[in-house]
Length: 428
Image (cartoon, rainbow, N blue to C red; front, side, top):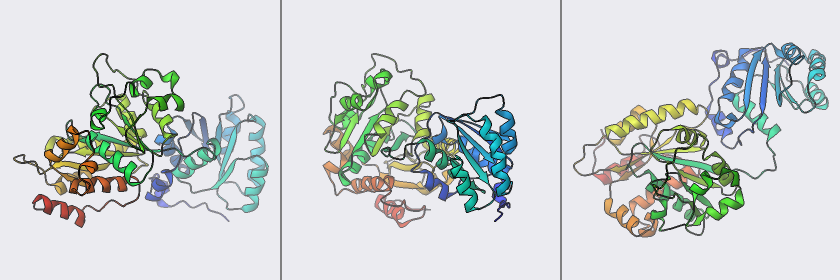
């Protein structure tokens, strides 16, 4: 059965759909491999090119060439074969098998081959698998198909699932991003009785140790400056237990050294922690350099905390636009509006704040310095101070949303209306 016709979207260039984005949420990162694709149509070449730009493929080296099976055979006459070859063929089933004989003669035994064809033929599929082809896929394809295929071939299916990373970052200093991150971490560990690790990445000025009333002798800095020692046993020694299900990698919060870090300074730490806990919260400082950018790009979920004033709106817009561009196959960042209703401060209405961003806030948290200050001074979480407080309920809702146990409410939902009424604010 022929499947030669491509839909209009594929001729123009593939864009990730909500279905693809959902499918990619559970996909593990591809290891450091080389992939070369030889395509006969733009409808197949473009999804592969877009897959190469996905954060899960950051370690793989991908090259796309037009020409199909014949071009691959000619190329590998004088070049070594990569870890994975993807070839597209529009030929009929009988001709595909014959054309692949030439490719088999120039391939290294360890090289995996994936064939993208245009005929949905069960007999052809069985023949290809028997001949040693790793996978046969019928066009049209999506970038999620490409990433999933590479994962199925090169990632051990029996490996333990990776923990979900949630990166919190403030649109501006002092908006309460760290406080929200710490309280949401505690809420997730308490509400769901699941292991949570929070990593305080603000090495000179981190506050996680203060908020959790801890004074650990060592923490995340030891791992950053001794990458050769990082493994699960070493990291376990650096973790401080905050509660039954919550552990912390504390920042040193000292200025006895400078912290000029490489772009991948925290990557091995995060990768290792993901193998030990189902939820990993990254408290990212309000900075913009190579390592903060890469940490945000590689996170499974991003939460931006902002207060409703102009500089915050500008910074949030820049963050949202940049992260949407660098993470085209992921959900947009989540938004939390904090410190709303501060007396005598001119503020932007939350709905007006969200409108140019194209992102609805998952929580609008009122300004309450007494409640937050009392919790901080006592070394307690908000839920420990008063579990019935409105803000404690909002923190619990955030925990439910970020773990997928609750859907985020829409932009014009009654949830926001309720908050506005409690704040005594009038919606436009």
